[in-house]
Image (cartoon, rainbow, N blue to C red; front, side):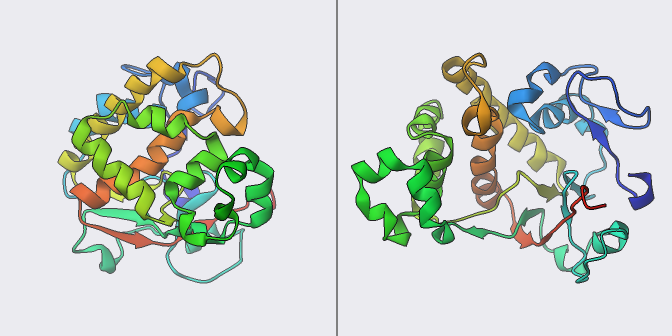
Length: 252
């Protein structure tokens, strides 16, 4: 990652990472939960150990090994990744404190996927096959991560946040995916971490870890946070969206 100017991070308890990588298994950490929390074990580590030392009003952006923030230059040259992703703050970000990924339209979910994964949901409400307005964020989570799990998690939220978040889930048919965001406010970032981890730790009491497996529930804590993140930042921050660049490292 040195060649593109980004700071790489090694997640989990595995120590097979280069020495110049940040690790989420030092100091105050929940690294042992990485299998279930995905990148949120790093977010916890950052929150508890490094947030105070960050410079305020300076952008910090989170990417993954396949998804980066695009510099808007249209190119398919996978061997020149640095030229495809942002290196400095775009001028369009000046009046915002949070950047979210461009939304995905859930109305475009293929009927074949709904039939494959949502047989019980179809029997209960056949109209979901044809009424695209019912394909909201709540529907998508139930379809992909088992119906009922999100309801259980919502019950663990404080009443006001639960009511507003539930309304958001049922009202919106677009979602900002991937758990990626940029932020230039330490206070906002701290408040986000306080809110999301309070909720996720409560969720551990009902989901635990032993029964979590596969795509549907294996990383359920990251899936829950993925739905909560855009709602929370849109409510408490000043947001705009920005395109991401998909980097196929296997082709490289």
